[in-house]
Image (cartoon, rainbow, N blue to C red):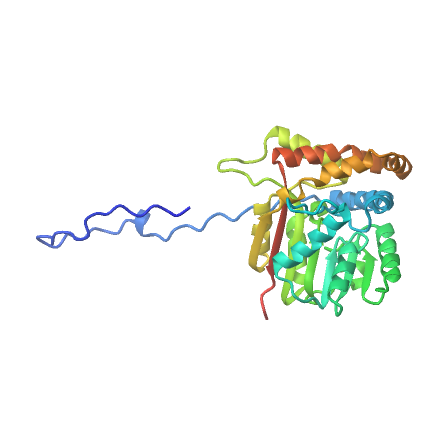
Length: 339
């Protein structure tokens, strides 16, 4: 909205009859303005709790990934749904559309080396390697099952020499056998792994460190809504909803999209951009729930195990969070400054 034009007024003042008497300086008006208070970092977990969380994440995905792949394929993330989608568009098509839309929105025209942080079974990495024939990718996951399955799928696609998954904590520079070298990647990618990160500040700074000078960082993640003016936190009802989701999906405390923007800027990334894509993913959870309620889905859940069943029971909570506006799907991109 264009701001209103200033009201016209007098543009000249009468000449004073005599010079005004000098007044002593007033410190209250002459002191430079105080710097704004530093933004508090997003909440993080103590190291022991973070280690417990990572172990739970690995177990959850070791148990549940096989069922997801059997029902939905090798893309373990939201799909993108538009009003003008063709009627025959599948959920898998929507998930691939998500990858392509992120690349296009971020202005990616070429990829040489990609770091896939929280890679699942490397569905995104294989898609990028196929779209950019000169690209190679390293994916990191906490789940040994996912890494093994990712490498098997890459070999079956003829991409084993270009797409590799390893097991480890992507935020720890010493983990994963040094597979993620700092400053080595022109594309650093995190598609729905930030939710699991127990320290969002350390996560974002690790992404920034992995990027080569001029390299692109892309993050798509679940967040809670931005707080309004005067709000110190979410409403108790919202906090209760997120706590129930956390227990099912092994999530640490949530942060907002505004928190992520501040962390991107604090990590020294430049050209930071962010958008709310919640409306574009809105049909996703309803479709996941419907697939879980099929005979194949129910039998698969019973065979998968307790953690997977618990996760399935939390799916309506995710749908409720999006519908209420408590949960948002936010995408962010930025670049590491040129050397």
